[in-house]
Length: 166
Image 1 (spheres, rainbow, N blue to C red):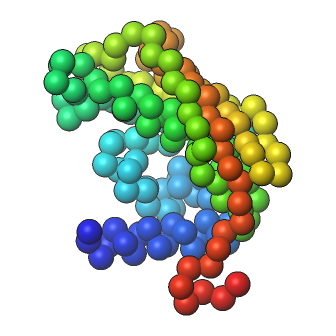
Image 2 (cartoon, rainbow, N blue to C red):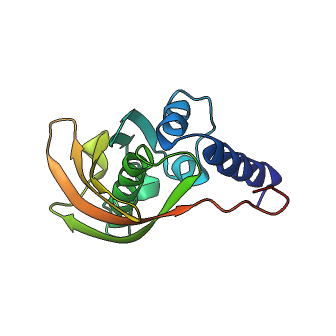
């Protein structure tokens, strides 16, 4: 692992502890905060963000194919997890974090390499004191549905990392 990536991850964690989820995601979308390692690796881009809603986009390429010559289902699952996580994050206050507890994904058709840009619109269903839920849909530019899913997330307080004060 490179020192630069570790530094970026540390920066992300420190910034998120000092900002609300919505403030953090708006700064990320504007390019004021570098993209996360996973988003960068897969080629995701945060296209829209507002309270309780997020749109994450990707244009699949050959690097996303499985052995059958179609886009691996894990890409759609990760796209849904990311969009739903961003949507939930927009509802989480400063000092609080979340982690995905479970996901349910329904694939309705294969994603082929010539599909063009895909977008996942994530919308929050519920945010409580300890649990949040959201739903999302992966569609192409024509509105064709490829996958949809839901996520349940656990909410918790950020813990200071080593060397940080509480």
